[in-house]
Image (cartoon, rainbow, N blue to C red):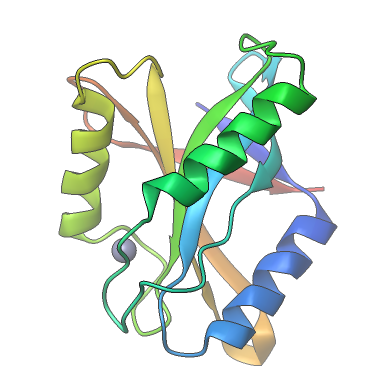
Length: 154
Ligand SMILES: [Zn+2]
């Protein structure tokens, strides 16, 4: 099973962004450090605050490409260890689970010709009761059904 560690600071940042976005979906890309044994530590994520409706999020690839470029530069292009981890977005009005459209989009991302990532994770988040961040994550691989990713808060 794949697991991903999120820091308290990262969760705090998500909480702030979710609160600020209200009923609009926000999202971005995630980068992570591979700790081995299918364990990852989230290194960071981009935040796109525009382009989302109450039930849709359209990503702006240029924004995320810039974010990825900066990350690769900062980590010395050590792609084995530091790489693209996947996508995230919020569901302000729905449970923090991937919709059928989300699943289709992730399958499309991972099956794109020229896609070098072996898998991509989709993290779906929302603000729950009393401002708690609710989240689920699923890993998508070419030719496989999505599998749930364990989220560890450290
Ligand atoms: Zn969604």
